[in-house]
Length: 449
Image (cartoon, rainbow, N blue to C red; front, side):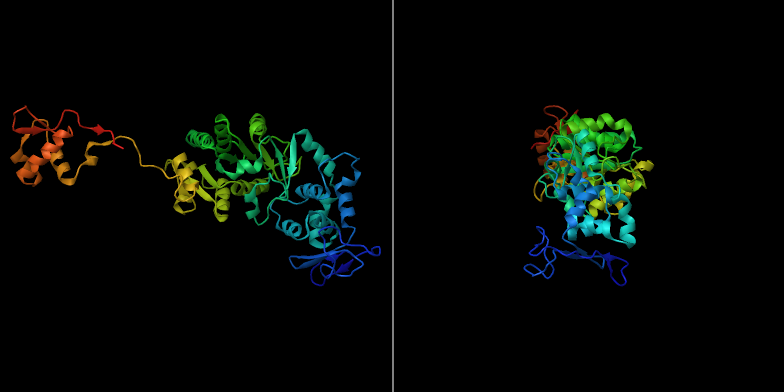
């Protein structure tokens, strides 16, 4: 092993290769393509450290993952790269930028070799978990749970995850839905675990209506708002996606085992962490970044000042997703978080599905039409007509008196009274009477479209 001055890292010595040996597929030889070298190797630099990967790195990676121990026909569909991506879901914590940079530059197979061969900080960080790798066991656990592994090369991979600085290396998915198709037109609904009935109803009603309009609903399967959002989508008979902060086979919280089964039946349960992994606080925060970027927009239904939903909302905003929040009672501590997001211009204020659809739709589409509800009788009147109409009383007044009250000429008042009479907004006290009065019923009139 040769040391790199000032880095604390080492480069594995390159073993001699047979004459005429060529680089493995996708791995350039030193000196660039076509270089005449007896050793197939790959060099890359991550955070100022230069690594050289020898030609036998694939054999080492197969041994580390346990893929070399699988019998013929076992692990169908699992090539070495897929197995190494599965391994990285156990080796590195979600959102680990060093691992992400290493994989981005070397690929998951060579990156696994490098992580296993290094001394210094990188070796100390990754080798304990590498030494306990057993990808065939993880494959078996996932298979028993009805889960599959998808990678960025698969059609099912949600496109939005590529916007992350440290995207997941792979996803464990359980459920019948095509994940990319559900996420292609989806909304994340998040909020407090200890939510109020007000917040629960907002989340459930919103999810139900958006799902009915063809939107996938993405959330985290937690108590409170998350559960209400999933249940609203399920009630509409539409798929919903639950993103976990633990192994794919685990039900967390345990009381949501039935809910997760229902989600998997028509939608998808997702985790970027290897099977068997426990839910940790840090993993919940990193889980939120997936919820924020898998969907086109995030709605915060209800949240307190320190809610984890803020993390999701701010991550969504940082990645140019639409962030929305419902207002709540000013007396409720569980609405202060939403009000902060709105006041700080992180979130747009919304009050229902129409607002959400309008904000998520391309410009010029999905715009709300003017309200078609009842309007006041005076809405369609001009200023002079409104002045005369408002001067009328139940007992009746003469034209001259109405002219004095309104400041209009008697001739003008007479003309206006005729128009008001046609609109049933004024009437004479008797067929031949000279007094005018307000009609007996003058409150709400339907708007004419």
